[in-house]
Each structure stands twice: as C-alpha cells, then as structure tokens.
Length: 575
Image (tube, rainbow, N blue to C red; front, side, top):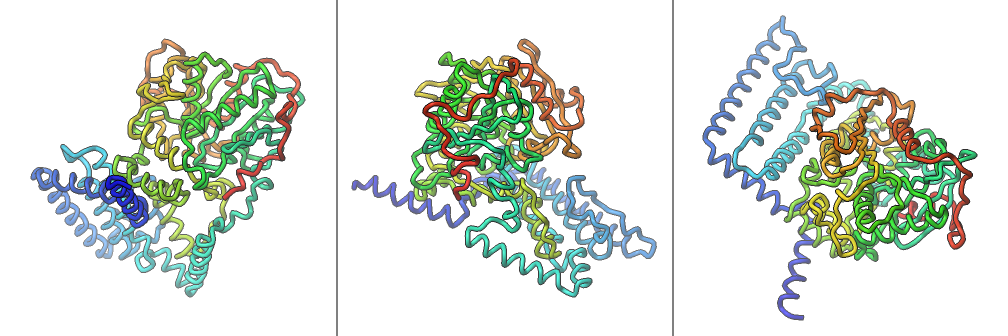
C-alpha cells in the first residue's frame, strides 16, 4: 500500500469516527457558518448598535410588563410580545398567571432578539445565515420554559392534582421508549397497525421480484377497468404503504374503486451488501423493470406513471430519458411533492453542503448505507417542537401517551439508503443541481426535463418542510407542455394522504396550457380559487379525461410472470 492510499484510509476512518461522534453533523460546516456570521457581525457596528437598542427596548418593555403585572389592577392576559399563530407552546391560559407570564414573555423577547441577530447581516453567505438561524432556533426551543417541569404551569398543576402520578407514568413511558429503541422494536402503539393486516392490506399479488424491488399488481374491484394502468413509484426513503394505509385512506384502494389497474413498486430495504447500488440501478432495476413487467401483463398499453417525493424525481429523470430515446410507453406523469430543481430545497438544505456531504460519505463508506436513525433525526430537528419537545412534554411531564394513527406508525417504519446512491443523490441533485441544468446522466448521456411532452399533474403541500411547494412549483419553468398544478392543505405526508371525506381539507388547482405565460407562485396562489375537500377526486377526473373506455381487467401476472406471493410481499417486512 502506498503512502497516499494509507493517508486516505486514515482520513476516512477519522472522518467516519467524527461523524459518529457528532451525529453525522459536520463540525467544520457549523464552525464555518458561525465564524462567517461572527466576523461579519464584528465588522458591522451599525448592526451591533441596532441589536443593543433592540435589547434595551426589550428590557424596557419587559420592565413595564412586570410593573403592570404587579399592579392589583393589572390585566394578567396582557402581553408585550404576541407569539405567531402557529406557536402553540403558550396557548394554555395557565401561562397568563404570575410568574409564568413573565417567564414566557421574556423567552419570546429573547427569541425575537436572536431572530434579528441572525438575519439581515450583509455579506454573510446565505447558507451560513440559514444554518445560524436554524441552530439558534434549536437552542431556544431547547431552553423554552415549557420544556421544564418547574417552569411549566400546566405540568405543575397536573403534578399537584395527581400527586406525582403523571411523572410516574411519564417515567414509565420514557423507560419503555428507551428499551424499545435499544431493542430495535417499533414505537409504542405501532403494533396496532400490522403490515398486511391493518395497513398495506389491499389484495394483490407480487408479480416481479429482483434485488431492488417487488412489483405488486392489485386485484381489480370493478367489473371493467381503464385500459391505461397506473404505476405508483414511492420514494425509497420510506416504505411504499403510505399509499396503501388503512382501507379508508388507501390511495391504492381509491384508484381501484375508480376503475384502474394499479401497480406499485415496493423497494427493498438495503443493507451493507447493497452499498454499491446507484441511481442508475434504481432506474434500471426499479422503474424500467416495473415498466417492462407491466408491458408483459398488458401489452401495447400506455401507463399513467405516478411518483411520490424522491420517486417523483426518479420518474422525472426516467421520463426525460424516455423522451430522449423515443420511448412512448407513458400516457401521463403525476408528481406528488417532487422537485426537479434543488436550488431552493427548504430547510433540508441546512444539512447539505460540501463539508457535510463529505462527512456523510466517509461514514457511509464504512457502514455501507445511510441509516434510518440519521434520517429521522434530521427530520425531527426540522420540526423540533412538533416531533420532539411536544412529545416530551405530553408523554413524560404530563403522563399522557397520545394514541398513534396509521400515518404515525408508517412514519416510524423507517428504511436505509445505499451509500453510493445516497452520495449521488446529494451531489448530483442537491449540491450540483444537475437535473435542472440538463447535466444529469442516464446511460452515460445527459437528459433534459424540457424534452418531456407528457401531460403533467403535480401536487405541492402548503406546509411541506421536505419539498417546499414553491420549489415544487418550479416545474412550471421546466415542463413546456400541459401542467396541472395542485396546492393542497397539509404537509409532506398528511397532505398526500387526503382521502375524500377527510375533515378540513382544501386545495387549489389550475392548468397551464402550452404557450401560457408564467405566473409567479404567489400570484398563482392569490388568483387560484380554493376548493373544499380532497384533491384525489380532481386527480381522478384528470386521469379519466386522459384514459380510454373501460375494458375487461387483465389477469394477475402473465406468462413468465407468475405471482410470487400475496401483497404486500416480503421486502416491506424487512427491517
């Protein structure tokens, strides 16, 4: 072994150890962000003066508030700073009583000061500004008075009322969660949603299995079906059955009842033996293998391909390659919360830069995959109150174990990603933005999204923290053909699982025809009317307009593709 190879192995081992020590977060990336912010703040006397004035004003406001609270006639519900509508931490009336009102108002003023301190600093790299702002929010969320027993009036009242039994229950819940985590067991309550029984229970057959996917063909529920089948391409960062949850909110079952033949890809949960699988493998052994199998079951048919999240990005890449090569097997493409331009990926971009990706690559090269725990940790930090602190307060302080639903059980059923694929995904799509620039290679040649001439149905969700809807909306700038765009209430997952009859659901929809002028996203939102209810019905009508007259259902499987077993198959059960 030469000295260069030895040096590389040594560095790789050190960086992998560093990744384990820092939870796969790059200390170099965080240090660079802090240094950039601190140096520009030090060189900005005007900004520092503004911050000093703001701190003094906040202290004065808090002093006046304290004086008003101490007066016998003081209004305990009066505030000197009003939290945003989305901030639910201090909604309980108990926070209006002394001294909790002073504590939570002081906390909100501190939060307001840090928001000002970490923004509006000229000359600082925007990525560094976002990182500093994010980590300041994380620190402040951790220090919130609502997270501590002695400063949370709701928790104290509960403790006094129950004589500490809530803390005893909370301690039991904490111990149970630790034991489950260490034993690799699902979260408490998830056993009520058994895969293949309570969720992912729509009847069907696995008609294809290779090293990467199982293809499920579902049994028809109508006497006749549309000649164009639907192929569902979920993301492989999740188990496929978010599209087939309980019978009442299963998208698969809904499509079957609308008279479609439905196929769905179930991705294998990779291990260290799959470390060398790459994006081309996911195209070849995933999407195109499924397309070939459907062609054997239903020859000459054209397919309504539907991709969700990363599956939608993969579908866009595949459709561009098919357009380049003259492959006309697709009838349409539907993209749910899928991005093709990653220049503004939202808060997930906080964890993606050269230093961060390099550290992840070193760790993945040692273990062969990107672990589910790392992924879950990143998403928890993006919504730290909803996914972490709120749970700690309710379960461990108040002693309330909230019942979980099918979506929460699915969310806890995590997957891994192969090392090579994940590295390519981060570098080609996020860091280099190759797909939108026409540089992304398929089969050794670049593809262009602009070559796609299929009708497109795209869905964005208003509160999506993974694929922000304005980023998804950029599809308008790349697809030249007919594009129907839906903006629905909800987040990345709950906005897609939006069955008819689901309460408080609404959506906007508008179709851009070829040649129509571009509408900026905010203009689109203001000028597009709101429809109450589920967007699923609008999608079903859109598909029907692009489908032929119903025919007899195809057989399950085909010669050479005999059913290998019942849905949901084997891969979805792998942990």
